[in-house]
Structures are given as C-alpha cells and as structure tokens.
Length: 564
Image (cartoon, rainbow, N blue to C red; front, side, top):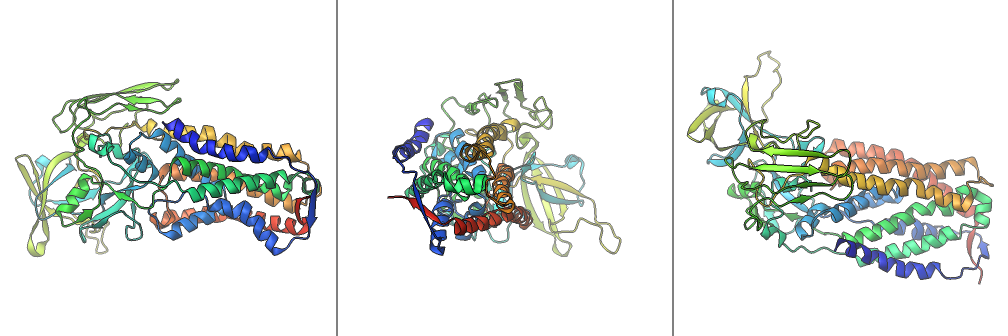
C-alpha cells in the first residue's frame, strides 16, 4: 500500500512532464531589453512559485508558515530536510490514521509543567522515590521535580503556546495547576500511549492532499525545467557556469520533492489532542477537553494478548521487538527480546522484569534502550495539606506506608541566599511530565535507542546527500562544462556561494528536524529561536547576493523567448 500511494503522485507527474519535455523545441531564441515586469515574472515563476508549494506546519499560526516560506525562498535546500523527514516518517510508520498523524506532527498531548504540584485531594501518581524514603522521618523537607523530557539528546515532548495554535475541539486547562500542551516525539509516544490498541487503530482522521499546491508544483517544475533548457546557447556562452538560468535547479528539485510530499503525506490544518493519562489527571482537577481523540485504555489488547511485534525499517537499521506477555502493572513479569539485524552491528537485547537498574534494558553499547526506566516509578498516593503559616505538607502514601514532608515549592530558591543561611536539605520526588505509569501499556511498545532515529536518519543521508550535494553540480557541468566564459568574479562567487550555502544549511536543518521533528519558529524556546535566527541570517546573505546577481544579469542579457 505504501508503494502504491508513493507511485500515484509520481505517476501523475510523469504523465504531465514527459510529454512536455518530448516536445520539439526550436533552439533559436530572440532577446529583448529586460523590464521590471520581466524580472518579476522570472522571479515569480522560478523562485516564488516554489515557496508556495512547501508543506505547511499543522496547527501553527499564519506567521509561522510565512516565516518558513520566506526561509525556503532564500534557501531552497533548507526545506529538503523537512520534506524528506516527513516522507520517510510517513513510509516507516504503520497504516493507522493516528500513527500517520503522529509522524506528521499533527497530534498534541497534555503534560505537566515545572510548576506542577500535587492536589489537596489524594491522587494516584507514579513517582521515583528518593533512596531513603522508608527511613525518612517526619518534618524533613521535600520537593517535586518534573523530569526533563529529554532522552539521550532526543526530545520526548516539546511544549507549545496553545493560545497561538489551532487545536481541534474545545479545551480548558486547569488554571495555575501546572499543565501545558506539548507535541510528542513520534518514536517516544508508543511507550506511554497504546497506539496499537484496537480502538486507537480504528480512529479516522482527515488530512488534505492540497491539489492547489500539487498543481503549483507541477507548473513550477515544468516552467523551471524550460528555464534551465533555455540556458543553453547565448546565456552559457556569456556567463558560463554562473549563468542565471542554472540558479533555478535547486528550486526545480525542491518542487519535485514537495509534490511527492504533499501527495503522499498530506497536510493537517489543526492539531488533535490525544487522551492520555495526564489529560485524565487534568480533567480531575477541573480541566475539560472536548474533541480529544484516542483512549489510554485502548479498548483491550491485541488478539495475542500482549505488546505487538515492532518491525524496524529496511536497511542496516532493521529491528524487531518481540511481543511482551502480561504487561500492565508493577507485579507483572515479562521478558522482551529485541533483535537488531542487518549488518555488523547486530545486537540482541533482553529485558527482564525487575526493579531499579536490573530491570533496565541495556544494549551492548551500555546505553539505555528505552526512553524511561519505567520500573523505577512507584505507584503512590500524593496529596497536600495546609500547615498554616509554616507552609504546606506533602503527603506520600506507598501501600500501607505514609510519610509527611514539609513541602519545598518548585519556585523556591535552591542557591544559597544572600544572608549566608544555606537552604534546608530536601528529598526529591521525581515525576514524569508526560506519563503516569510504571510499565509500557498494552498496545504500546518501546523502540531501542539506536532504532529510534538511526534508521530514518540513515535513509535521509543515503538519499538526500547524493542528490542534493552532487546533482546540482552534475547538471551545471553537463550544460556549462564549468567554463567561466565572460562571467565576472563577483557573479561566479555569489552564485556558487548561494548554492553551497544552501547545501550546508541542509545539514543544519537535518539535525534540527531530527531533534525537533515538529519545529515551528513561534513554538520553541526563545533561546532556540534566537540561535535559529542567527544561523538562517548568516546563510541568507549569499542568497540575497545571488538574487541581486540574477537581477543584474537579467538586465544585461535581456529577456529571451523562442523564435516563432
């Protein structure tokens, strides 16, 4: 099915493109003085039209898409990492609508923020207890710490400003209780949400294959191909490998990639909220979430009664996780066998149920192979009591054991105050921001660390780099032979700097989208955005210089058309 859906848009493109390229073209051209209208037409059809074909980011405000469009207009290869990322994630994900939407970044979850605190009413919360919990005495200090959503440099969730986003349905977060909306990382979500359960696989979500963008991609692809073809002759004789018509090729290549991406992956206008355990907790505190999708219970297990087999993608990063029987609680016993095959890096990982470090899966490189060591979390009942002027009391109940601590709020200073009185020592109770469990739920699964990103990153490197880094120079050499002809040093320098800077920024965006697949300028931390802006500005300088050189050469050369 995946191959058929991929061939459909490519087949339509070939049906339209091959007859066009097969037409007899008269090599005789007529050149007239260039006007500003001619320059606008050239720039619009060869550059600006490409920018209108890029896949949009689900749910973001209009100015995010405008910002992204402007960046890709200057640096066309910057969108290559994004589009290939979407295509590969789509092909490697399973066939359910929910998992396709997760891979596209069109799903959001409710998470605990750093300001989260226990309720005054007892709640079931899975916590990493301090080592001295059972020996601790009453009256000592304690605080709640939200574990960072980061695993071996990989973001588990990324918080967003939900007031700016378009989210399906109507929702209300509990006020001032430490909850926020975040985008989950596709490879980490199955560890805490049963994406493979019967109910969740049956979810139907709508997506759009924008026919307008697909038609624009075809039109831009055909027009820019003709522009490159018409570079032959007087233009190459005058400017050599700096001919302005050759600058169109990166945009032609990206229009083809965008056409495949939109036709295959599609677009989502809104984010869909996923009904997770943390959302259920937020509802218990007065939150409401109309229109949320999915079920944390999942409607039962799969037919074999366990976690279904996880197949890795093709190539050297192939992997499979055999099913786990009887996962569902702290007392469950389970053995999980992970096989990673396809090359010299073959490894077998066995996960045996147990507490603490012994139950944590470790591969032969000594790295944890799951995003969390779930057995480290203990089922507790947390609540808060008012202690009057002296503060609040944190009540932690584990089975029949109850301990009370003087609560140290998350906003309290941890550094030594100015009066040289050191803050009190305190115990730390760690809570997950995105899950409330101590085992992977039935219908969920875990992907070992090397298989989380290794497979699709390898796919991207094997497909993108040979095409993006070599093909532009192959086309240039085939047409110009890399002869300078009458071009100036400035023309050659700016045009080549424009091309090479676009290829270099491709590496930056590949790294960016591997860490934050759902990256949108307004949804990231200001420091990340500032760094992103600096990088884009630096790489945009050659692009601006390239545009200026193209306009200059157009005025000098004139506007050419085929002779009647």
